Length: 128
Picture 1: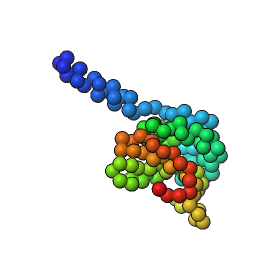
Picture 2: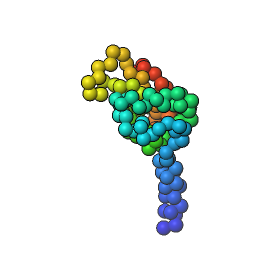
Picture 3: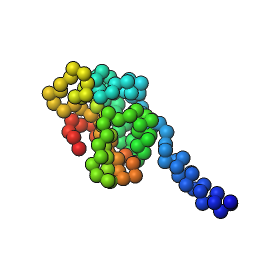
Picture 4: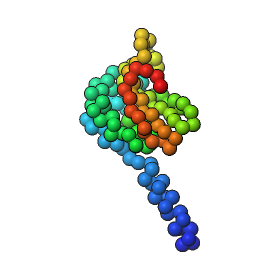
């Protein structure tokens, strides 16, 4: 039994550490952020300057920490087996009722590597 506990306890510790908690989002109003799915209400764009200031603080964080901090992503895109993207729209997207954007909406892209860690944070109108 002791051998089993010695074997299993490092894995339990790694699992507890890897889940991660909420991240420090500076002065971003997270209640507004989470209530503004797809950027439809125009609340997320108010925090753009703060997000630009602190975006590199999220590098190396796990995907679950991003979700706990900012809520469920507006869109998830799997590029290949080694990377994926989480999209959070700052401007109203095509998923908003009554909105037909003339251009691609501004969004925050979190690029995740194969182990679900954030490797890049970009604020852009472009798709990956």
